[in-house]
Figure (cartoon, one colour):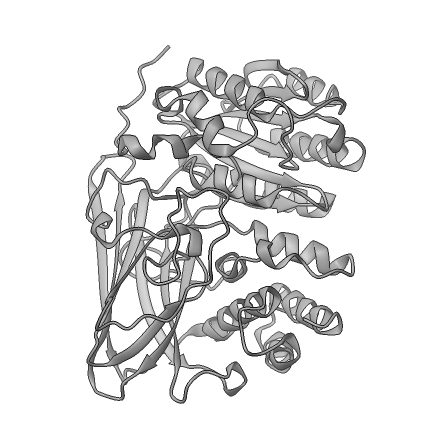
Length: 495
């Protein structure tokens, strides 16, 4: 077996690598380094929670006074599973559970067309505008956007991949769920290159290696193995992940992108059932150099477990409940985002107390870092793939004074050279910014929609609806059309 690169993370963070819940999203990760882009991240400050507290409920971020706490520091996050799950709930005529609504995942479900950087890492842009009247904020309050963007990479230019799929075939996956997984995997195999390789591990009461690492050029063997997927039995997720990581470690190739991809409804009722315990059992040495991606499947799933597994397994989380959404995830997103452009990406925004009276990060409560961790490259943070953006929004109340408003900085590790990359941008109070395609308006509505659904805002969906509908008419974007329809559905349900 080829020797894997040494793990750079703090030993205290190793336990987090075993958390699986954001698998396919990991493939969609996005961040950048010098010119334009977007990032969704967490705030270290009042109301924030230590990301190591895996399943503990975390509070909504509160406003902070920059005179007491000028720095907001967080790990980059590109999950979108929360928005996908809320969409499915509303299409089924129900409101999503408030504790499964993540504003940052709503915001990062849209394409804002940010400028790309020339190389690995991020393009960074900062801008702001007044909050709309319906938002109900203090007079003069503004929404600030910190945007990160990575460069797009052609399929021909990426490294080959070793994908180890760990597939839940327990009884809860029976019926439509396992059928959707089969169809999605068939599609994915057809989309990959002949030199890519795939292995398949299944689990129910026990785990089974259905197919060892097999080049996609041998498509018949892969398609036959996918056809053999049937659901029955209990759910021993830990056994499946353990076998999946061991198989991925045996096939590890330093010249390839090595990933474990978990597909499950997130239920675990046999063996170890908590993400931190699963990761501890797998061990940091086995996990080194291997990214964990998680995909939630079905019209209901354990979002908390999957999200925490993904966030702490250097990956992303995504969700689908229908064949159409599965095709989008596997065909449009997964194959176009294989590879890692930036590792351990984190953001620090420093607010000037002379020009800012208060600030509040909207969402990202479970991605906070200590301020001193920003320049500590041993601290685990977020991984981002090619061609993706991340957006973070702040609600800010200015003092009315002129001068420097804030400084946003992003820091990451180049996966090819191992060197640290940085980018920084300063914004002045009173500056005028031009955002194309009403992107900041869309991001603001998406964030507000999430806050209304989880009950963390003074306004409701009925107040948001007119602006959502106006944006749908002017942006010519089907995703924004759908957003307006979802806001209308939520308003009808009383959110």
